[in-house]
Each structure stands twice: as structure tokens, then as C-alpha cells.
Image (cartoon, rainbow, N blue to C red; front, top):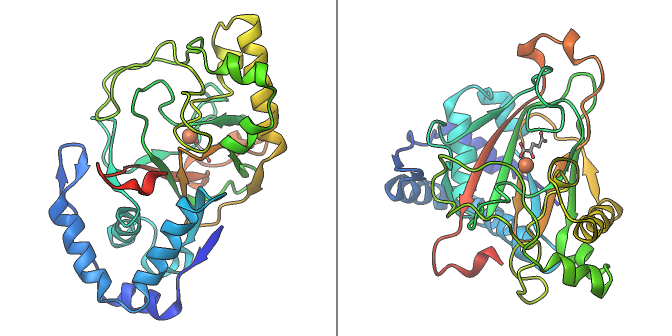
Length: 300
Ligand SMILES: O=C(O)CCC(=O)C(=O)O
Ligand SMILES: [Fe+2]
């Protein structure tokens, strides 16, 4: 689901910069959210664009969207804070922006590190289907990725898959195995506002189909010690996710927003030869997480 910004909205957004943002602990301050809202609701065609975005993320069968901020990025420059304020304001129309990493600002860089474990965030290899913060009891409701620069060598397609649709294609036996707390992945320390470490966790939490998280990362197939039967069920799910996947190349200024209760995400490998690309020209995304306000049903 790709959403363009109407040109009269773009023109107004460029002409009237938003004020700088304040944080309240790990969260974007309510005062900033309110100021952005007040300014933006007065902007032509903003409300309908925000409504289209929310609908794409929560409607039946929906769960991700790409907001095309490329023209704004071109005019303002992606390293200008005015551009980041706009992306933050669109995010705030979906849920509350926050940073689970106390040492990071709201937006976290995901660059390219050739020396890093290739399957990891900012590694160069295939980043298999996963949800972010999978081993937290309260993962972020949304994960978002703002593209500053795609891979200049042409790799790194984004991949998305409907997690509940993939689960529905599995056998009853596999679903029963995935509902057992037999899975674990990664480390957990120094995180804000994502609950406790969840270890071991069940992939399926017994919520009605289409509700709740499909708490899954295909990375655990390689990186975690799992029992044979549970690993087989997880492998089946990983295969179904690939069968149902969509893929596309994020362009400069594209803002991918993923509802983690519905879709899992990942990324194809970057093109070979990254070591020949200067660091300042390599692929760069900025990541931001969102938390649905208590009592706001729009996470589902
Ligand atoms: O590089 C990408 O496109 C995705 C990165 C990602 O999913 C992550 O860092 O969690
Ligand atoms: Fe991720």
C-alpha cells in the first residue's frame, strides 16, 4: 500500500515548518503531539491523508503502508530536522512515537556495516522475516523505517508478509506446537517501555485469529537451540511467510510503517560489493517505534 502526499499538502508542509519536538522520557511529549496536530489539521488534505494511512494499517488484510515523502525529502533534505519533524508528525497520527533504547534518540540509524553479523540489523545479508523486539512481553505496536538512501548497488528489497494469513495455512499440529512456550531469541537488556524479557515465548498466544502478535523471528531457526518438533513448525511458518511475501525497493523519502500485530518484515540481502561503497553513500534507514495509546483500539 503506497500513499502519495497530495501536492497542495506538500507545498504547505514545506512552507510552514513544524516546531522542534520534545520528549517525555522515552516518548514523544504530549505537548509536541498536540502542537503538531493543531498545525496539521489546519493544513489542506492532511486529515484525509492521515485517515488513509490509519486505514491501510488497520483494515482487514492490511497492516503496512509506505508513505511517499520523497518530494519533501528532496526539497528539505533528509538530514534537515524539518524533514524528520514531518515524518515524526505523520507517525504520531498512527500512535505515539517512542524509543525503547535509552541511549538512542527517537530515530535510530540503520546503516550498513560490512563487518557485522550479516543477518543482523545493519548487516549485509538476508534479514529474515521477524518482528522487532520479539522477546519483549510488550513489543512496539508499530515499527517504522524511513529510507534516506537505498543500496546504491541495487540490493536490499524490503519484504513484508501477512503473519496471520501465513499461520492460517499451517496444519493444526504445527499451530499447536507454535502455541507452546518453546521459543527464544536474542538478548534483552536496558530497554524502555516494552515490558519484561519473554523467555521462552509461544509464537501464537491463543488470541482469536487476526488478533495479537504472531511472535516470530525466522532468525531463531539459525541462532537459537530449539527442539526438533518446535523448530520444524517454525520452519513451516517461515516458508509460508516467504510464500505470501510482497517485496519492493524503498526509495529516498519512502516511509514504511508496519503494524506488528499483523505483518512481519525483513529485507533481502544487499548487493555484493558493499566494501567498495564509501560509508557515506551506503544504504541508510532511520527507525522509529510506535506505541498505541491505552484504550485506543486502532492497534488491531
Ligand atoms: O534494513 C531493513 O530494511 C530492515 C531492518 C530491520 O528490520 C531491523 O533492523 O529490525
Ligand atoms: Fe526489523
